Length: 201
Image (tube, rainbow, N blue to C red; front, side, top):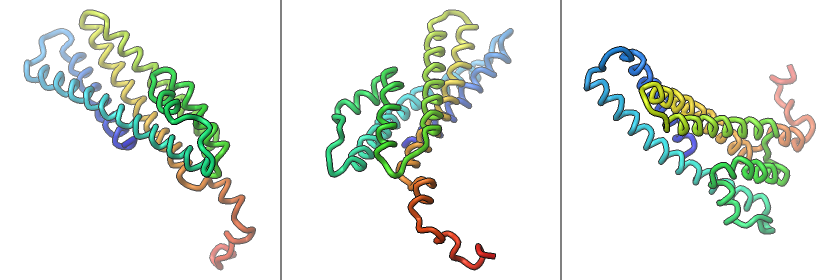
């Protein structure tokens, strides 16, 4: 679901970029009705679907985090309550600060852990996306053609940032689901990597 969300966010970014290009091209004259109608419809459809897919991806990622923590802490219970995890992950703004804590706890408890740099990149991507969305919403309260154009371009940037955030989210999720190279190297018996004649040559 996170991968599908990233794909749709990319589509939304392209659609909003197209809409901005139309607004810029016809800034000094009236656009044909079919161009106006088509680009407006595309923007609305892309926006609505992006919101729905984004919410679904957030729910799916939260479910993954809850299950990953349960698996890592097993056989003892997760020290954090499930309800608290769901609220901390899905509540806007609060999740910027709570999810990194949950992931760091998971990283420390897991032998399949991502590096702190990966977690930092994820947080930066999510923060940039959040700021871009906030700016687009703020500019959307303005009036006039310039405010409309600014809102479109900011929304395109927010969608592009969402693509980045989705990509970093998938990277973090995969890093916990697959053995980390540093742990694999540490746990492999010495010399097992160089057993093939081709490598010895």
